[in-house]
Each structure stands twice: as C-alpha cells, then as structure tokens.
Amino acid sequence: MKIYTKTGDQGQTGLANGTRVYKDHLRVELYGTSDELNSVIGLALSFMQQEAQTERIAGPDFEKIEAQIHGIQSLLFELGAELAGFPTEEGSILASDVDSIEGWIDEMNESLPEMKQFILPGGDPASAQFHIGRTVCRRLERKLVAANRQMEQTGESIILGTIGMIWVNRLSDYLFVLARYCHKLTGGHDIPWKSRMQRPSRKRS
Picture (tube, rainbow, N blue to C red):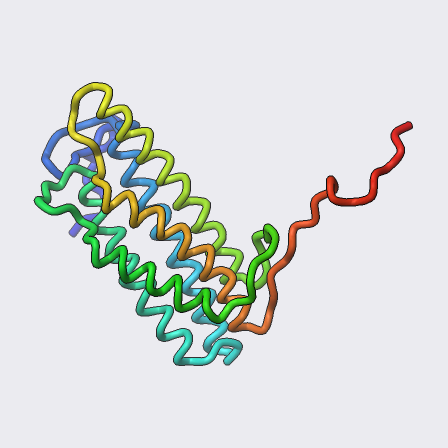
C-alpha cells in the first residue's frame, strides 16, 4: 500500500462518504484536531512507558493507565471517522464510554490530595504532556461546539451528538486528573499558581 496517492496535491481530500472537499473544510479541521489529540496522548503514554521501565512508576499502575489510554485512542479513531462523515446510526461514542471515563476519573481523584488552587502545567514529562493533551482536547471541544452551532443555524444535521460532546468534555477532565495522577505515581506534586494579585500591595511610583 502506497503512502502517497497524489490525490490531495491540489488541496483537496475525500471525506468518509466519498465527497471531495478542500482541506480547510470544517470536517477536515475537526477530524484533524482529533488526530492531533490522539498523537499528543500517544506521546504522553510513551513518556509514562519510559518511567515504568526505570521503575519510577509501578508496572501494574502503568498497565492500568496504558489499557485506558489505548481504549481512548481507539475511540478517537472512531470519533474521527464520524467527524469525517462516516455514517453511523447510534454514534461513535456510547453512553457506556462516558460511564467508563467518569469511573476512571473518580478512581484517580480519590487518591489525590484536594486541589485548593489552580496549578501550573508541568512537572515530569508525562504529566506535562497530558496537560498539553488537555488543552488540545479543549480546542477540539470548542471547534465542535462552533460546528454544531453553525449547522443548527443553517438547518443542517449537527456534526456530533450529545453523548459524543459529553465524552469529549470528560476526556479533557480525565487528562487533567491523569496529569496530576502521574505526579503522584512518580512521587512529585502539583505546582501551585501564585497570583501576583494575592501578594502584598506594592507602592506604585
């Protein structure tokens, strides 16, 4: 199978339903962002793998997260196909997928210290990368909201249904909690945000 087909040399590509569109088409932007998110998450997992190999993260902890991430990455492929126009009766994301990700969030959150202030993205490489994933996921969600609003205004079918939208929202929450959880597994800690506005007033010259 050849990687290059030359069919996109003029700035067009084919959607899942066979329609040819330009590469700045709304659907192409959406499934491209979903693919970007998938790649960012994959890199974060590879950082976790390195930490597991050096025994900074216990094998069972890594294996549990790895299974969750692989499941999420597979669903992002399903979501990408739907965003590309692949027909599906019940949607690529199911209510049970939302239940699963909420369960994972709750399980991790129970073992974390209460967060009483905003935290800075960063820390160990895996944690920092999951924070990047969180922001990409939020961007995907913003683009999906804009796309659905646009479709509603023109009387067309929405791009992604309610369950899919909820799952994308929960995914960003999951990535945020996972970033904190990575710190816990490696013995690190959250980096608190210290606002200048909370410091003693300084005289202005």
